[in-house]
Image (cartoon, rainbow, N blue to C red; front, side, top):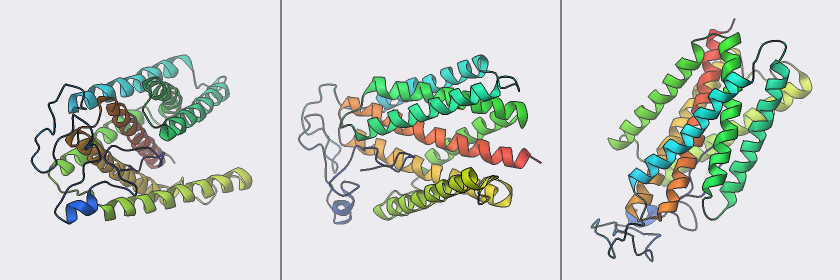
Length: 281
C-alpha cells in the first residue's frame, strides 16, 4: 500500500502492484498477504503464523520505539535550534536562512528515503534532525512575534488530532478503503497544487499571493490542511496495522516511524499557521 504523506511516493507495508494489497481480495471474501513468502507472516483469516515465528517480524512495540526515536530527534534538535538560533531583529535573517536550508535538506532526505527499496535508519534520523532545526526556528519566531502560547497550543492541538484519529480508527469509525485512499490522494494533490500556485504568486507578485495563507481563506485552508493531516494519520495507522498483521520484517518499523513523523510535522505546521492567523491582527 502507499500512504498519502506530504511525500506521496513513500513506500508502504501491505502493497500490491496498484495500491492497497488485499482490498479487492477482501471484498471478494479472501485476503492477500504480500508477505506470503515471509516465514514470519501470519494468515490473514486465522491470525495464526504461517511458519514458526523466530522473532524477526515487526511488532507494535517496534513501531512505537522507532517512532519515539524519530520524534525525539525532531524535538531535541528543535529545542537546540530554538536556543541557539535567536530570532531577534539582529539575527532573524540568519536564523531564517539556516531554517530554510535545513528544511530543504530534510525534504531532499525524505525524497531519497521515499525512493529507496528499504528503510535506512540513519537517513530517517537525519531527516528528523534537519526537520527539527526548521521547526525550532519557526516555532521560536511564532512565539516571539505572534504570541507565547501559540506553540504550546499547536503542540496540544497536534496531540489531540493524533489521539482523536487513533481512537476513531480503533473504533472503526474511520475505514480505510480504496475509495478513501483515492479521495485523500486527490484532495492532497489539489491542496499542494494550490499552495504552490499561491507561493509563486507571492514570490512574483508580492504580498500573500492569492490569499490562501491569511484572512478568511487562510483559516479555511488551515482547517483543510489539518483535516488532510488527520486523513494521512488514518492511512498510516492502516499501514502499520497491515504490516503487523502480515508479518512485515522488523526493519519496516522504521518506515512507520518515518511516515508518522512526517504526518505529525504536517499537522503541527498547519496547526501553527492556523493559530497564527487567528492570533494575528
